[in-house]
Image (cartoon, rainbow, N blue to C red; front, side, top):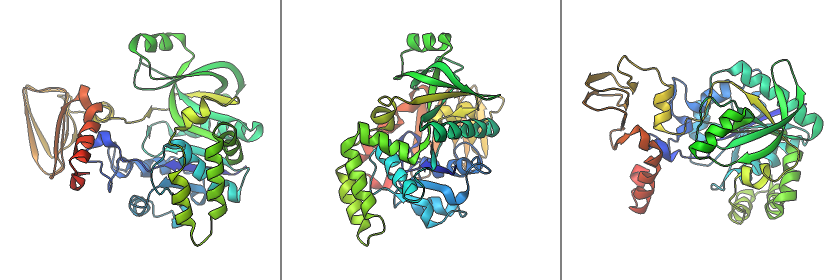
Length: 359
């Protein structure tokens, strides 16, 4: 069994403006530590997946930035999307590349911008999932054991145990649930058999292509067009033409919620999807006032629990709390932590204003 890592790294991370831009997206920033997020993601795959079997799905703008950060990879490690079309086409495109060289190869599909503290736990769960997916032509996902009634994640309901190791159990998936309200999230937490949807998937390349053919036949036909063009002189033109006609749909809606042989392995591995500046504050080391961030000096007077990114200047906080302050020189963001999810609307506004210099 050969294991292939597929890292989805084409997004911009609009909730992390003004640091995250088209030319410096979230995954190439050191938002949660000294390493950039994609460097940390590839490092946790060491000893699990060979560098030669790591694929980065991204775009032409981000490819050279990512390759500079990952010198162990070559140009052949990159799968280039002409433009974004959500996760189902992204994964289908990567599956074509894997299947072309190894149809029985097992893909480990991961977002490039998550934080995982328990690397040993992560690798053990992936090995278990990969072996099961290889032996049973199954679709396996990792579910995160919830510790609070979170309303920002989708949930996976686990059924009977199908297989187990000393450290993990694999369950048949009963249902996928959308992001719940607080009452429903509390019920999920109390039930003990609902887990956060991590967005990590394990399957054979041939298996996911078969599922796309079964549930998204028009997409499969276009992927086959792309597959036939691989290696041709006009590949990029044919790729762009087919991709322009492909359905914009997530893998969750298109495949995971439709397929039959779907399984989940619950895991407790220090996972966080780092979905907003508020989350960055939550996972960062804090001073005695509860402040975190990257700043040479914070003067805090009657203030607490704020995140400050201003790497070149002193910042004084007076009589404030629960703020996000991000200074990039050409732009300054100030918002309540509770409104951090709405930062993406600033990006929408700037797009409408044609402010490409700030995007």
